[in-house]
Length: 245
Image 1 (spheres, rainbow, N blue to C red):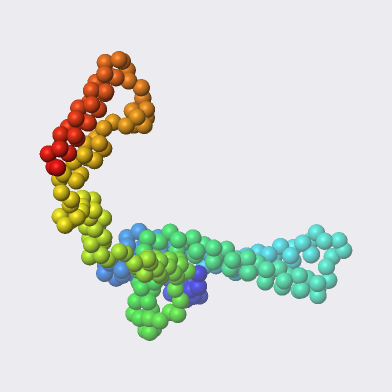
Image 2 (image 1 turned 45 degrees about the vertical axis):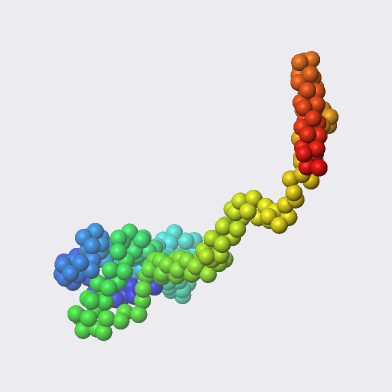
């Protein structure tokens, strides 16, 4: 988070002053009611004085220890150095707590971008140029996430190309064509009926191999029927052969 704590401290010095400056932004819709109420309670609160409070407190504790508790008593020079160092440490600790409090405040905002815009408008009304030169880390993080989302979307758009619809239809038509159309013999390759009649009937005869593959006959009746079918097929083949001659 990077925004001017000193400007916020001097500008929003009291709750009445804060409400007066932010009320126009609420009426224009720049601030939400939740953010307006949160800002009027937080900005003028006691955290503005934490660095001074912690600095004075640690300095007083160091002086009290050096003059009342320490044995032997601290010299004047030691008291100055220790109290000065304690003041500095206390102020740093107060500023750290102040920064943490402001971070928690910004994370609780419903519309952080609207809050930043409201502060710029307040600065313009007070005679500034509206360029405060800061933004919230939360807004930057959201912008980075938005950029990453856009970039990932572009990568998906430029991914593997899809199959051309026209080519797909042609491929599907060729693959779905009936096998008879692709492999049927032309009329010029057909032979006379007499030349193939005998072989056709012979091919229709059940072979011993096929009958073995289909399993043995279930009864003697099936055996006789098979033999009769073979005999009838041979007679029919001979009859057709005699006619063709």
